[in-house]
Length: 330
Image (cartoon, rainbow, N blue to C red):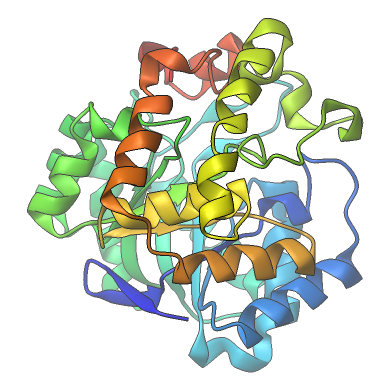
């Protein structure tokens, strides 16, 4: 596995998003998930992404159990800030809450430090300078080693970086979610040497030609996401079908082409596709070796123009809860 830099933090060129091992995509099996985590290690993946909100702590406990013996060889990224004590989540970025969440995550992860600790979503009630100031103190104490932010605006990112160097920003980025190209985030990452960790790089499997609505279980996040409903889904799947001719040239899958496209955008980008299956993990890792031609990258850019993709990423209620309502289209 090749490596890349998130700021001055070296990680594998592809990370593993672990959220689905706990919830949001139907039932999961801890035994199978641990096998996938071990296979990821064997494949050279060093970046493992989790959060206290995933499974309400279960996901961190799973990683703590599975990866304890190789702790010094991996990079654990976790997040705080999403509060799930009601049906619709809320955001809390208060300094004292950040510290309490970090302490709790350290225990669940069974570790003395978290390599990369993110604020999961921006909290308009708390100045970002106060939150990052609290995270900086945790870094000084050795409880975290790098600070990250997730789904914040360009202005918030600049303000945060002025308080303490931000190592990485996590944003949804894929052929179907290209807002970071137009809202200033990708430009700032290049300018300030900040890594861009791309979550949902396969648009929650929509960029896979194998995605079928009928396979969704009860509790699957996609059952409520506008991008996966009715005419929007039909439109988006027609876009995905257009990848097939490109994929055939490289003897690859559409999902692998989507990952190869993302990796080609900039060396500061590290995708973190999630999976609970060893088969898909191998496919994702193999995508790192695909080098797309300039012509094929241009063709993909044209097929997946922002205006061609239909449906928001989240429901209106979640957009509002996550303070993302200004980005409703993407």
